[in-house]
Length: 441
Image 1 (cartoon, helix red, strand yellow):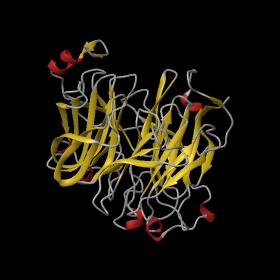
Image 2 (image 1 turned 180 degrees about the vertical axis):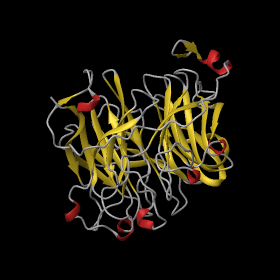
Image 3 (image 1 turned 90 degrees about the vertical axis):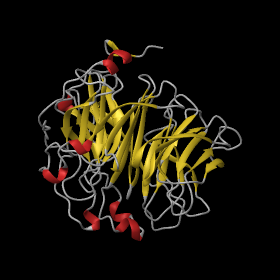
């Protein structure tokens, strides 16, 4: 199949030489408002006025399964049909939670599944086959990932079973291919290479097929099955930045391009809000335009922001990504070395949300809570609304590891599900939230 990128094919794009964009693009950081309880109309498939767009909180729950104190919630993923979410853990707790989202306004816990080694299951992802999800195992013991059957074969939503596991190495994040039985797992260490590829056709017997990328801490994988592209983000090691792969054969990624952060202006030489590059963390492809959005994670100093890359929108290509826009969280400011201030105002996990003719990002941005960014003009991405995920703060008794991180909000990840037109967010202190994007009358 010859894949199209706008009006050009992949072959034409890879053969083209793109000019390098020179200069710094600053985002317009408008002040944001906490309008979670306002009325309005949902926006999917409607004309959208960004000046009237806001987040409306529709549901909230605190996953439970271990004895108090609580906290330590991490990743969230939403099944394609929108009926379930799965939540991971870190910082003092372990295991995974399956959440029933059949009514997004009233999320209900379907199961809690611990593990015998008390190991955090930080990252969680659904397989494209209903009834299976993956959970990464942080290396407090020898581990990599497990495959959970909650309805695929013998498991159920109330009685899940671990049916497959890999116990070598360390997998900080896992990414299943959206349409094929293939799993990509990142090797988050300075002495390992990039990411591994597994054949998971038989969930009870995952089979490693190969390893790809340079030596260093690969943090994230994102896959676009329509464009047949994979982007890997590297935080440290022999390469920092993003690497693009052709995954027309999902089991055998082929590198086609790179963007090297070490050739760009570092955050240590920049002011807050000024475009800079470092510690590539997490990315998504725009589903409608040839753009890639990539966020940087900074623990201290100048906080990381979100870059918009042209990969075919104008002069860029998958072989030559060109940065065209940059933005930071609404209240971004320099972070101290104190543990409780680390990561505070840097960007974290996000999702791209097409609405009408507009395009937005919904992001979990740590102490800024959930933030909505307008990226309709990719050269001027900017925040337009936010919600502080600090609900039930006074009623929470947090475990010691979570308490070291300061106070809520501390939003971890935002995921968008078009089937229900719902945004699902986790906060490491205060649990799981559901939101609608609404437009005031």
